[in-house]
Amino acid sequence: MSTPNGFIERWCREHAITEVEALMPDMAGVARGKIMPVTAYCRALGLNLPEALVLQTVTGDFPQDASAVDPSDRDMVLRADESTIRLVPWAADPTAQVIHDCFHANGEPVTTTSRYVLRRVLDLYRDRGWRPVVAPELEFYLVKRNADPDYPLEPPVGRSGQPEWGRQSFGIDVLNEYDPLIDDIYDFCEAQKIELGTLSHEAGAAQLEINLSHGDPLDLADQAFLFKRTVREAAMRHGVYATFMAKPMEDEPGSAMHIHQSVVDAGTGENVFAGQDGAMSPLFRAHIGGLQRYLPAAMSFFAPNVNSYRRITKYLAAPINVQWGVDNRTAGLRVPLAEADATRVENRVAGADANPYLAIAASLACGLIGMTEGIAPTPAIEGSAYAMPYELPLSLGESLGRLRDCGPLVDVLGERFTAAYGAVKDCELRAFQQVISSWEREFLLRNV
Image (cartoon, rainbow, N blue to C red):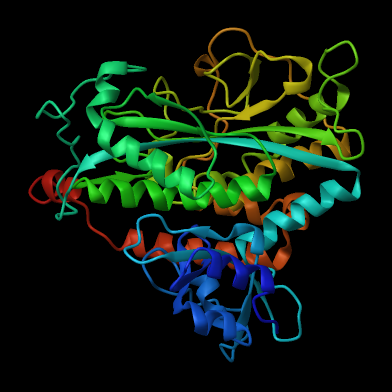
């Protein structure tokens, strides 16, 4: 066990911090942890949480199969990652937040945690002299507050006093409807050193997208984790909800987390996806080949909830297969037009509801297997990928089955982790299957 180091103590003094939020992301990417007075946090001889927290579902339950944790329900020790310390800009009193890694009492890492899994994949790249670079793009909806889960979600009222109806892709004036809220998002993100790129209005009613600047995958996963929390808080302050559900409203496009990814040589910093002539390198093609072969087996990390699969449908800006093409947004894998040093592939499969640590880890894992196995991609498509068959699983149950049967992916991500993840998602799936929906009551109650 270890105390928070001197850097954190000094940082807290310099910023007159009174409280510390000690955070860790769970399987769903939800923030778990403790809030402590700063003196208690800096004095603590190790911050403990039950290891079973790793297996908590989005409903607050725990799977019956708890073999991935110690049966005694022992504690795990949280160690601060000092590079993640940030202000909580919306807190009433000066408050810090710190993301933690989890360890057993003997110093061994808890291998079922999200951050560990991403670190594991990055270590495999490092062993081969490679360093991945990613840039997530996150879409989300603003919706009117809704206390009744049976009532469909609606767009909120903007500055004009009217809700937004219809689709306004890349609309500037309609984006300005939410100026005060957007200003808070930018201010909160700047205070937390979350590096935002462009903001745009997406196709759905009150659907926005913000791009995060490219960089180290672990740092970007941390930023995406904190960004979701930030957007929800900013929205609440303006009397609306922000949701990263994959498909929150009928007849509207779903929300994605597109992951741009490339790989550079750790020694030279040169992009290994492009040859000296700027053409796609064999390693790049193999990376795409790995994504094509293993994305279906990794689907539960990109579409982790039952709602996620409502997004996977034709003609609504979501992919249905793992075809790839140059500057082709209908394909699951898009290669944007770019200079040689920015050559990359955009994985368009992941939903905004995905745990950013696990989605990035899984996407990089698929590409890594392709690079190490020399997997050849299919020819790049011309035209619409929607004219080709579905290749992605269309349910959470199918996705989990494919993951269990995929030895190479399990080996990269870790057998203990994938078993724990499957147990959590099976538990959530069973809980959903017990719910009788309003559709069933409307159409089946008196007709069958």
